[in-house]
Image (cartoon, rainbow, N blue to C red):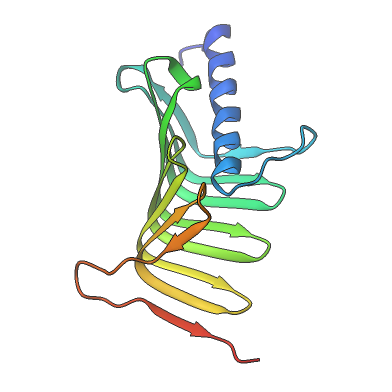
Length: 164
């Protein structure tokens, strides 16, 4: 087993904290400094040659007001290292839970520059008012819009609302 250098340990810790902050930003929440963010996974690796960091195996990100589950979370970063996040990808059994609603999908991406979150494959959003399903969901955080676009395979968006 190869020991990780002190510099690499600091790098990994910084990247983990940055990932958690990005997740809090994608839902439009900025938490106070005293809020704790916990990321757990079976494995974590930094692939410097491909400028990415990968959390794999039952990844769970928890912070007040938000909980994210996925089989894998990939952070893509630019030439300036982990402070230059290009995008995030969540893959496999994605679940994003907030107090007022829960979203499910097969996969998702987030671009911090455009502040656009996309969920793909078997998308389902559930809240007290009802459920909306479709093959894709696009959330434009900056402009405060959400859209279930038409599916390329002809499947229609379905919304079921409670009348009570």
